[in-house]
Length: 109
Image 1 (tube, rainbow, N blue to C red):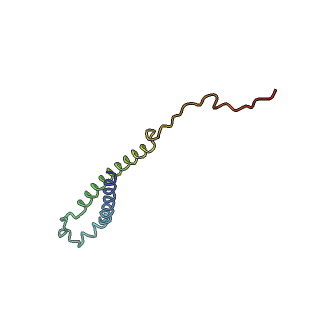
Image 2: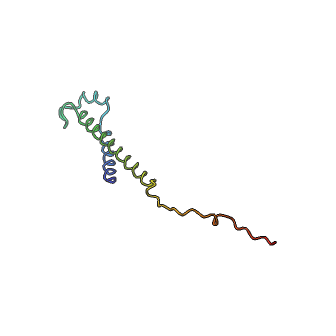
Image 3: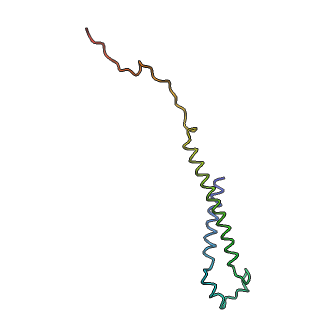
């Protein structure tokens, strides 16, 4: 599932880059009105501005959702790797007094 979301995330990022580079700036609208032939475009007389800006907004929202999803996956993965549940239990019996006391040689009397 994480791989699928990552692939969709990368595809959305590439599509957003292309859409943003294709769009014209605000200054290009005035120059296009003097001979741009706006009525003959594929997107109609209003131009491609509305269509491309809406499509960019939709892709941005989807990109945001996939970013949050990947962040949640990463958080869950890091919590699982640092969880105490995954650490094996190595409980041993406490040492007895004789095992911890130093060895004292007998003195000759």
